[in-house]
Length: 156
Image 1 (cartoon, one colour):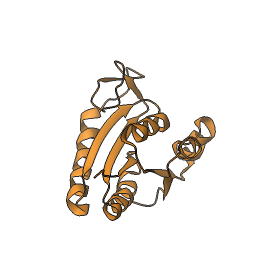
Image 2 (tube, one colour; image 1 turned 90 degrees about the horizontal axis):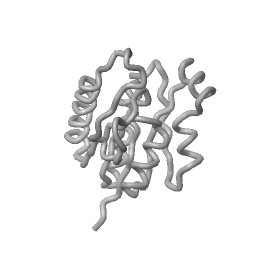
Image 3 (cartoon, one colour; image 1 turned 60 degrees about the horizontal axis):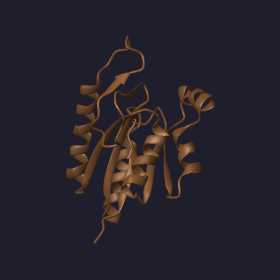
Image 4 (tube, helix red, strand yellow; image 1 turned 90 degrees about the vertical axis):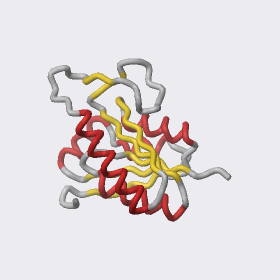
């Protein structure tokens, strides 16, 4: 028997809301959840195999770098999800373009759904206007359903 997989993009500002939503779907579908944190301020130091275990380097060497604390916070959130939702959860921390990285993980895991957040703050609008949003990229380049969870800056 094959277990379905749901891939969820975990961004620092949207993690709790988006992960909780994805975990509820995973529990209802008896699916495995693959949590993917993509840091677009970093690039792979060596060819990326998509495992989330490869070394990365910041694009700007002078930028504050807190990868360990970020990964620890994500792991704590994921541990809570495993317990609360009683689901299997894998974590991948990648570097590069979020849309392309999520698409690659979805293809590699044969995901049945991708879940991402979409914030509506002023910074989100500017970024989307300049670069396009991750949600929009995925909706136009995927063959599996993409669930976009609205996340306002006022929500926890």
